[in-house]
Length: 198
Image (tube, rainbow, N blue to C red):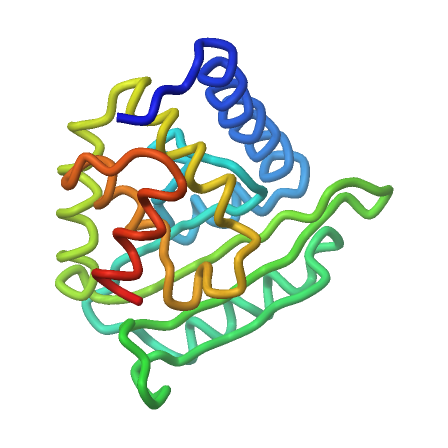
């Protein structure tokens, strides 16, 4: 196991804590958080897992029959928010060669008076379309310790600027490597990833 000294563990855990606190402030101050709650979105991903290394929040909501018109109207509502300056929309049911299912809005937002940019990913799909990923994340959440969390944070921080990251190299691969395969350290992770997914 690659060792992280106590100072590095503290730094990484503090980074996550500070980003989660900043995310709370941004979503409250912008009003976006209130809109998401009213629309039935639930927080998922690194915020819930306490493994944040950059300004990115993930949410999803389930619908028995996802409705494109409702999805589009929701995006139009978000577009009126002064903090939101970019929206991108995907219909993953129709997108060729897409492994995901659902309707997606991707937001970029920041304080109009100045401040860091946050990325917010919003997915709407049927419960069964989230089921596999949700089951994995729930299982991994039960395996997380502060030590494991620090190793995940260290790898995420090191690889987040790689061109393949979030294209073919995904954060779930990091959880899988550390929590299922006892892979620690950036070099060991990259070798494992190339053999398994590269």
